[in-house]
Image 1 (spheres, rainbow, N blue to C red):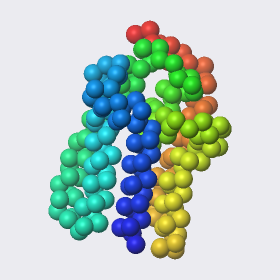
Image 2: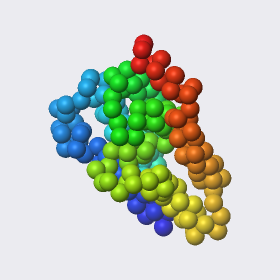
Image 3: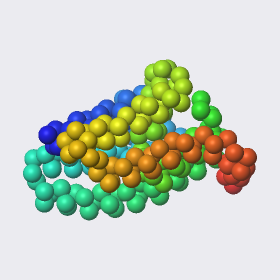
Image 4: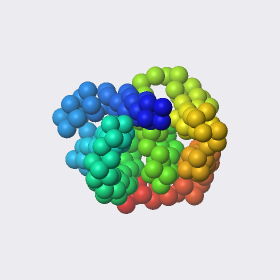
Length: 200
């Protein structure tokens, strides 16, 4: 049952990411897509690799290939470090380009910085979904985003009678990020920081 649940969650995450980046990246031909710079292409490739490694880890565990799973995990650790470095570099480049987003550049900047710090990477994918209802309110957006952790907590309670400490601590971190994002983005200090990054 654990393997089936984790495989289902991996499939949902893969689908969320694909829907978010299908038009501008995957269906546009990945490296042939019209992106602002080579850095953005590199960023897209690395973050796609992370999702594929995650799915492969679940598949290897499901098929009981533990040795291969551990070997892939070592690669995943190195990839994670590279993701954070390239992620911040790409984000700074976006701010310096004075890019325009529906949510506002300050909000995007603050949100993505928090996402990188907490390693919660589904927000950028969901933020690019081509469905208007996703952005109808913060409650809808964060409700969809946080549904993944709700599924995890519900499964823990159903299968074990209690939630794992890792599930609780991870969920708490994500909730802190959710409630911090808007106030941080609209604070004068963050606005000044965004302006300073743009001027570099």
